[in-house]
Figure 1 (tube, rainbow, N blue to C red):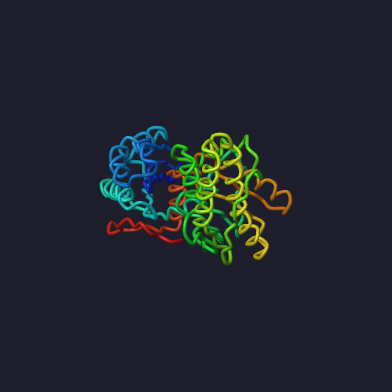
Figure 2 (figure 1 turned 90 degrees about the horizontal axis):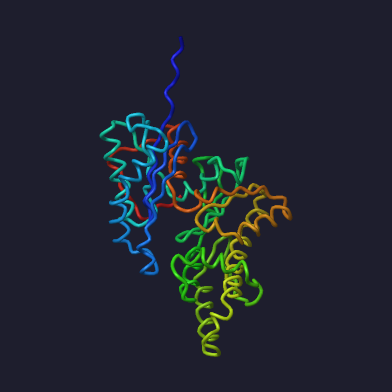
Length: 343
């Protein structure tokens, strides 16, 4: 009789911002992915760091317990624990890092620190219904979220290079701030996306920032949008209400065009047609539509994670942890959270 090898079972923990998440991976497949959202921030129009860290403390134990339960795994079966070390809100990160270290110490198993942005890229290797195929190396990944906008040259699972990034504000922040200027609730990105579906993207024009190389800048666009709205409201106090859908469609189209212009330039310069997207803004329907058009026009191969793996989640953390586990890239208990953590 031959003894079967023990399966690789990894728990992943994500707490970089305002979502507490835990996931379980068994031999490279996601068995559970649980996310607890924090609705309290809607009252403040943005994430309040102190409130976020307190909510993580309340949520992390039940979220981890639920992830283990859904995966039908006992904690004693875990091979390792992967966690987000950074980048993110320091107070939020500390909750996840401390929990992972303590649990791993109690179980006497290794820990794996994960870069949040690398994990977003590797979300494209999670089995999903959108793509049956996985990216082949090298590929370009447009990673766009509330805090980051990057073009990442991905040479291997654990070999990445940022070739372009925002010099100031991120695309996700541009969406949320534009929504706030219009008086829409937080988070504004999904609301703009929804309203824009019935609007004309060419109704209003906004400037496209001119930035060197493959880099981005959205601060000027936000300022231009603010003054546009103020001037129009002077002419007509009901301007936003009367043109809400067209405004949303126009600003959304501008942000997406800026993102894809640099991605198209990088693809052309480097001769790479394997293109992936990741991050919360990857859930934007207009971005996905424009990518589909470019796929046909430029003969790109497009890869997009499922919606649940676009926003912050532990599924992507545990997937990144799995590739590190295979390389035995463990860390020790002296590791600490870091708010700034570059690829």
